Image (cartoon, rainbow, N blue to C red; front, top):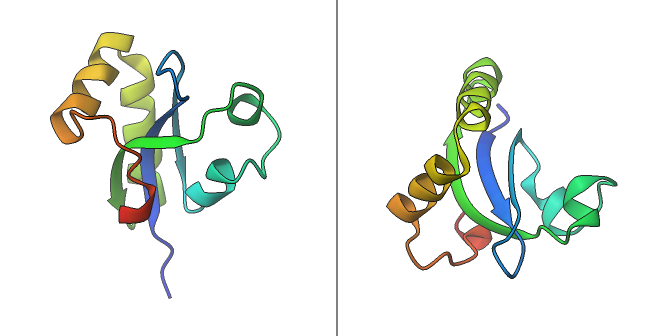
Amino acid sequence: MEKLFCVYIMTDAKHSVLYTGVTSKVWQHKEKLIEGFTKKYHVDMLVYYEAGGDAYGAITREKQIKAGSRQKKIDLINSMNPEWRDLYEEL
């Protein structure tokens, strides 16, 4: 079975922090199982994602998103999820 890789943007309840990542296990961040930035800043809402099967492509896309401004990330989120709902259950 092929792993599904996901490029995603997560935020905190106040939408003050944006975290861009790539993983096959978004749930680890959601459940705060990984020590680091997402756990420290309570980043647990998945507000944007792009799913695909190719790890290299996902990493390349993650780098593109990270290189963009905060406004470009907000624009991506708004294009998919204007209400900034937690999309975790959609994965």
